[in-house]
Image 1 (tube, helix red, strand yellow):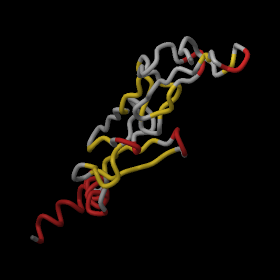
Image 2: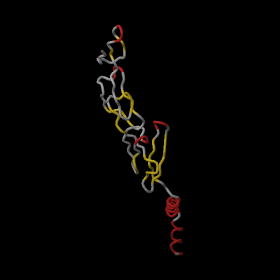
Image 3: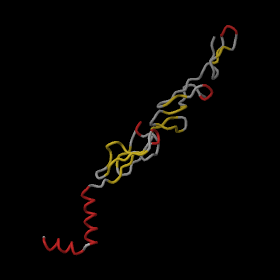
Image 4: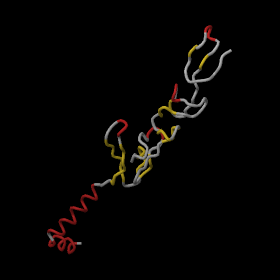
Length: 142
């Protein structure tokens, strides 16, 4: 006769008729607790979580990233829950993806893109403000 009464695999009687067996926990999206950390057989008790997930109580929940000016990374691309991490190719029009850091601390944001035309416009405004006679002559010749 074998009995399930505890948290360890061992034979506690001569001839091994009486066992204390390990409890079996489960964990979706991570590694299940074992030994004394698994307090109830069949329970969802996670020891650690896979990339893209974080511990929430005893379970592993999907990370949720945010992204100003674009689409937030999801799943394994969102390494840190709550981080500013934009999906590759997910920036809004007029914005481009900029990365910083590496590994689990990497971030990816969508920042305003400036075209060459925009830079020329800024230079033109500077020229008009600095040399008003140039603006007057340009207007007269048009």
